[in-house]
Each structure stands twice: as C-alpha cells, then as structure tokens.
Length: 135
Image (cartoon, rainbow, N blue to C red; front, side, top):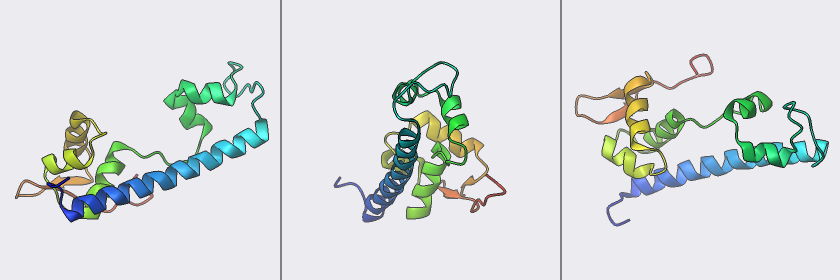
C-alpha cells in the first residue's frame, strides 16, 4: 500500500462503504422475503425452489425479475464512484483501485459508456452526472 495515494485509499473506502450499504439493503429485502415466505417451497420461479436454493442459483435475469426497483451496482457504477471520489485517473490507477473488476471490463466500459471521457492528458473522467432519465 506504500504506492497508494491518500486519495486512492479514501476512494476505496468510499466504494466499500457504498457496497456495504447496498449489501445491507439487499439483506433487508432477503430477510423480509424469508419472514414472509419462510424456507418452505416457494413457486416464484415455477421450479419449486426454496429461497435459499434460488439465491444459490444466482440467475441474473431471475434475480432482476424478482427484485424490481433494487438498483444493481454495475461496472460502470463502480468506475464512476471511484472517479467521483478521486477525480480524473489513468487506466492503470483505475485498475489498481478496482482489483475485483476484470481489466477488460474496465477498458470496455470506459471506451463504450458515454458517461466517461478520456481527456487530452490521457486520464479518464466522468463526462456528466447521470440522473434518473439517463440511466
């Protein structure tokens, strides 16, 4: 960690805090579902799976269908949170700060997502602040 600047360390802390908040939110939803339906067989998917079995299946489309309104943290969200916390950063710095995000995903998101812009000095930044209408 000697090579990490104070801003990078603080950015990572902010990202982890946001992830923890969202995990708590999802655990609360899970708790409510378990209180409501228990661990008995629930035919939410038509497959007769218990909630625990369903959570282990991790079928993204099924989870999205069953959790409407719960915002998912995307790769783009992770990169944007980091850049908002520390300001413009090089691709290398972003990769170091987000070790759990595959390098190819970072490169793809930065080059394809219009919310990011590569400045003339070669660093990446958030081009605009998204709102409900643009996401």
